[in-house]
Length: 138
Image (cartoon, rainbow, N blue to C red; front, side, top):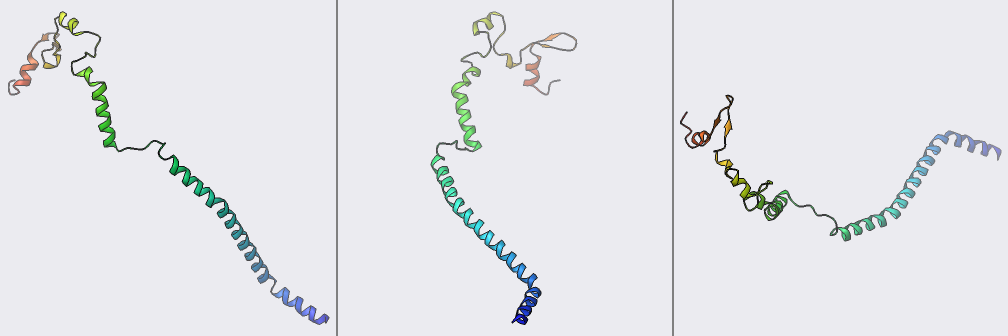
């Protein structure tokens, strides 16, 4: 009987590396499966809760709009609130229309009759107007 034990020990010693590799792989596989089960047990309910939370609170959050829609909204807002400052119904500066006319200046400064100072220091009146109306005249 002792010879059988010796033979068994020799056989075990011969296959010891192979058996240790199998045991390590088995332990790693078991650890991976346990981690997978724990992750699924926590992750699936948590994922469902997050998804449902996002679906119920989606209406309460800001919704993004396209740039075209924003531009349309901004143009309407500007026309309703600020366009009267620039269309003549209200003056944007501190002067009132009666003060501007009493100074001798006209409101139509964009028409080209504004006095322009040249390098020589002289003032020219309506030369800008004539140059704009007839570009061929030099």
